[in-house]
Length: 254
Image 1: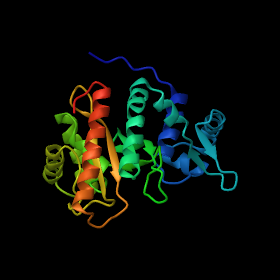
Image 2 (image 1 turned 30 degrees about the vertical axis):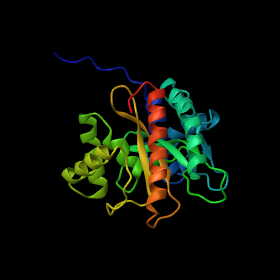
Image 3 (image 1 turned 90 degrees about the vertical axis):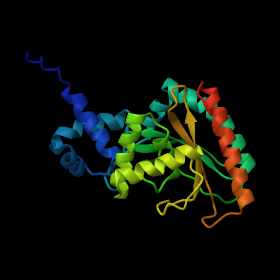
């Protein structure tokens, strides 16, 4: 039996193509570059860019004419009930954690085959290391958050993400899965001797009722050399406790 053709929405498709192209770019793009990326002419995308700029989804640099995404899409996503609920539960706990360990902490969630920072708390301290809210990073063993988010997923999704990590790190899927197994067995990422990690950081999952991680709570460490065992143990214990509290707040399991 022949399937009925699905109704199309060319204008919407065009706008989504532009937004997705800008989201995947590391810098601003000109109209010509955008047109090439979405396979359309400059005249075809001009009116759509004007509309997106008027609605606040993109911004145009008056000096270069290049377009970049604004944070409007992120703000809309933050208002989505599950995300809003997660942030409401996590932010007070993160503030306490940052105060206790005197280090910044941030919250990340999966974003397709990447992960995104959705919240950040800074301690009352003169120096530190932190990431920008809204920043998106690839799934790779270079990042503690990526490993934790991938390790604490349900089986099918876990294998998919292990494959993404394997491709990004140019290792075998078997090796990627073995690394995730170690992290899940430890309840988080508390080791950085895998030869891949870029920034020394500890990370724990925020677990929902199904048993999967909806987020990762991460503490980047200022020191990139070996830190004293007692200090490392304290930071790890505080982070584990904070992640467990947030998991319980959203009705999940520790």
